[in-house]
Image (cartoon, rainbow, N blue to C red):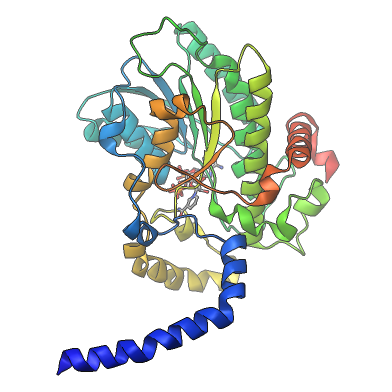
Amino acid sequence: MREIILAIIVRLLTPLASFVEYVFSEYVLRVKEQFPLDHTSPLCHLISSYGFADSDVPDLAGKVALVTGANCGLGLAVAKKLAKHNAHVIITCRTEAKCQAAKNAILTYSRGRGTVETSVLELTLMLRVRQWTTAMKHRLKSNNSALDMLILSAGIMGCPYNVTQDGIESQFAVNHVAQAFIANEMVEAMRPYSKKSSTFQTTKPRIVFVNSFLHRISPHDTVPLSLAQINDPVRYNRAQWYGMSKLANLLFSKALSRRLQKDSRYSHILVNSMHPGGMYTNLPQRVVGNGIVRIFQPILNLAYWAAKPVLWSADRAALTPLYLATSPEVERYNYRGEYFIPIAKVGKAASVANDGVLQDRVWEFTEQLWKQPLSQDK
Ligand SMILES: NC(=O)c1ccc[n+]([C@@H]2O[C@H](COP(=O)([O-])OP(=O)(O)OC[C@H]3O[C@@H](n4cnc5c(N)ncnc54)[C@H](OP(=O)(O)O)[C@@H]3O)[C@@H](O)[C@H]2O)c1
């Protein structure tokens, strides 16, 4: 009897579903095109396989990786897995205490495999970031060492309006300006290409920018190229400005990739960006507001916790940056300036990200932000 009722319901619902799909097809298509979910939830993976697994990570003995924002979330998960596969991992965190706690967590996870070095790095002040990169390059050189992997995972999202001491809106400063600078500077410290290096399955160093599918929600689908617009407190929208910082970073990563490819000293370095998926980490739990908004934070946290089953764990999401940082496939297919989605699949970034002119303009604008006495340019 139950089966008959079910059959009737299905027979009634199927034409209804087709009708709804038909009526809204154009709209659905347009939304999908402008806002594809980029495998943001693991649910998208129910019918497709992963492109990479833990067991695919090659032996990383002798390799050196640097991971920013490695005390929690995605950065910590990536650092743990790199160490587990015998890499020497340099982790950056904002305080010495966070560095030590992360180092212990990584070594416990890797069961003593790999080695971990720590470095305190705060991304809101360009002066500190500049000092840090100089010191890190010096440290690597004096240890007779070079970087094989740079994973830029540190990030903030949806914070209340704030301008750093350098005079840059804080999401744009942390997610884009500072980490673009680090990538560009650390290129010099990356391992030179050597065909003889037969010990490693892969020989080309990698830079991985952790991006987000939310790069699509940058205001007016573009990146304003003036601080006056970026720092506008009236138009500031937490989500859109997060998207803007990620779109700027994506455009920059593509420009960096092209520039390196043209430079014979660095043309072996593979630069890519990726969206890790919607993860259950600290990130959205820090969307604290000022004043009255603060009372909504526990509700927001509860909703986020309730959504946990449909979000990626940082551990699983780490496979996409790990793929880009370690897989021989990346070298074989010569992936450069690509945008990847979970898990380890080539994704389709917003079309504006492929605008070569805009990529160069974002590069030039970013370069100005590194050099200028910023407080005078508000
Ligand atoms: N979670 C998601 O659903 C999601 C989705 C798409 C993309 N992403 C991207 O994934 C990356 C990692 O995010 P997550 O989810 O792992 O977040 P998370 O757990 O909050 O980790 C963020 C890391 O960035 C560090 N950080 C923040 N501000 C910093 C600053 N001013 N200077 C130095 N380090 C700073 C944090 O250090 P403290 O702990 O000291 O603050 C932390 O180590 C970010 O780039 C994010 O945009 C995340």
